Length: 279
Image (cartoon, rainbow, N blue to C red; front, side, top):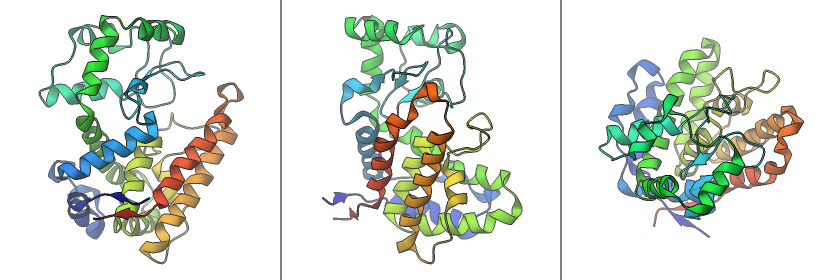
């Protein structure tokens, strides 16, 4: 089934980046997307992460030491669990909301170290079931900021290519720019970049590694064979992303049981190759 999408604002914004492909001349503050663009991103990520179910915006996955919140399942570390190898985004999202004039529940701002108040998954699930004041206010906050969550996700993605180009060897930059340019020249490829970058990060954080190997956007761009056209770029991105994800699972600690997530992750990657309609 074809889906509607405009992405006019994104194409216009990225045209400067993909033409020059130099981090110093790219400013995320200059980017302006249409309301339809943001609405589409919000709906698709909400479907991927939460199966379109608002109750799943408050989640704590089995085998993990932290809750995942919002349409993008932003990680929020607990004081008891400590930090792990994955990027914590929920406190940054809260700061983003405040910057944009949104009222944040007072109890969140009063938390020591800005850490989640639940020590364990069981405690969180009990609190969610009881639907107490903290859970109620958190659910309300997430429900009324759906589009802002999409804007937060897109804004992070817009910063990724300049970061990648700044940190990778000069010898790699031309090839990465070409791959990115071909992907960004179609709305399907551009959406794939946005979704994957949110899904698995930029791949530059040294902490986000299993056995020294990452799984972010940078690793996928590295793994891609150089496409000969925009039409083949998305399929190559899909192939490379699957290989990177499968390598992550193979390298992951057995106790995490990541193999159980692989079919869902690969289904998400396959959704990138479904044609999007402008009508």
